[in-house]
Amino acid sequence: MNSFGLQAWQIYALGSAVFAALTAILAKIGIKGVDSNLATAIRTVVILVFAWAIVWAQGTANQLRVLEPRTLLFLVLSGLATGASLHSVRETRREKRADERRSSTRWRARKPRRPSRDSQ
Image (cartoon, rainbow, N blue to C red; front, side):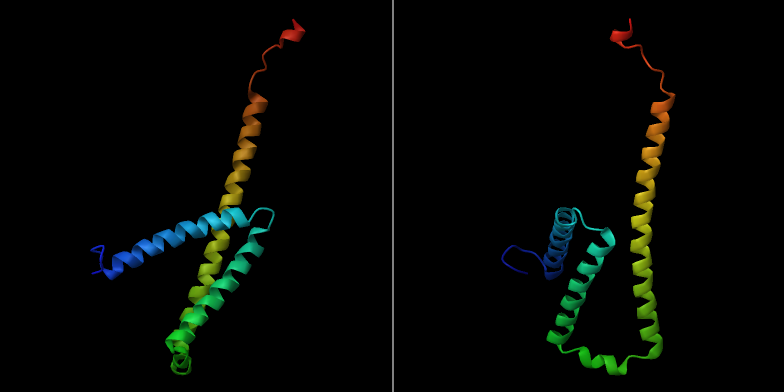
């Protein structure tokens, strides 16, 4: 417990929520005019460097030598699934926006036109 009466896991959970919100805000601000795939690639490189810095700081990099091939395979497959998931979510959002544009265009085309005041 600390001086606020919070346990360590509560502090980490709060930090996680704050950083998740900050991530979303900064990404929305910084992505204007940038292809979303390029933005994701840049952010991923930053995360990669940060993750390896943590591994080296903790001194756990030597565990790479004792990883079993099966473990390594599933970690790689997990990474590929994560990448595919991100791509699928992005494409789903893009298609949804396109569908919304198409349906609003169709609705406007079917909407009866009112005579304008100029034509009377």
